[in-house]
Image (cartoon, rainbow, N blue to C red):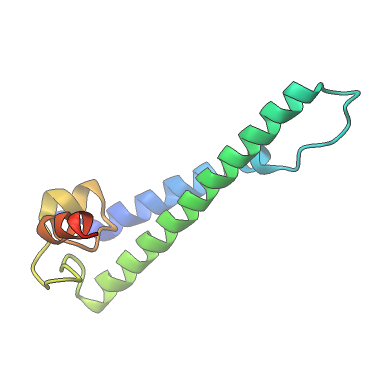
Length: 112
C-alpha cells in the first residue's frame, strides 16, 4: 500500500521549491527602453505572462493537494467524489490529488 500522505507532501514540497525558483520570472517588466529594445521588452512581457500562468497552475495544484490531505485525514481519500467507488491505486499514484475514478472522469470529459 502506498503512503499517500508522504506522496502528497512530497508533491507540495516540489511545488514550493518551484515557486521559490520562479519568483524572478513574474517580476514587473521595466519600461526603460534605453536598457532594452521594444522586441526584447515584448519577449520579457510574454515570458512574464507565461510565468504568471504557470504560477496560477501551481497554486491550483497546491489547493488540490491540500484538499487531498484533508480527505486523507477525514478517511475518505481514494473514493470517487461522483460515484463513491474506490479510485484505482495507479491513478492515485499518478495524480494523488485526483478526485474521480477513471469512469467518472471519462464521463465528465464526454459531457457537453
